[in-house]
Image (cartoon, rainbow, N blue to C red):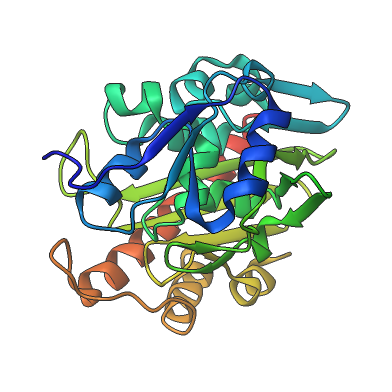
Length: 287
């Protein structure tokens, strides 16, 4: 399907040039990185920007670095790059697992993790891993630089806390100093390219605490302090998990759509939650 409307396009070759264009065009512009979500939105009749600002030429944004315990992922890092990174595999394994489940190889070769969270569709795969690792979003405009906890990033379905003249330069995660292991579970209709009907991320830490996040079961992805507090410090038995699964009903608000009913999403979220907790604990015990 072709894009039915015309718009202006410019490829920025430096961060400063991109920020100047954002300052000039503001809400009349859109930033293009991988473009996989953007192309679909424009084909579906979403508002067309006056100016499309392509940032793929800004090589400084295509980086994965570790400084002490702080891992930084630049805004042009694709899901394929995450999969190929030994650093992500070894230190941010829950994101590495999630990246393998993003759409198809062709999409993963173009789609960026930062673009995924900027699109802010409820079914995104990046959110749960970032939430349980308490990531920070780095934003920059001509006027200032800003950092924002990922917990404050998602405002509503397809809406974030970004300002109209800002660009996300990357995402950072301060890795735990104690041993930790994560697990990601995604409900799909079939193997291969498919959107998430529901997803769950769990991080287990050596001190007996847990972090739990849910996606595609509400307008925005969310962590659950309630469930985390219940699990923390307990011996994780089937009985404890059964109690926690009942609590999920008070935490998420799935809907019925063409891909799944709300009842099925609720049931499978409970199943995936149990699987994710057990998988994270197994990984942790093997470290």
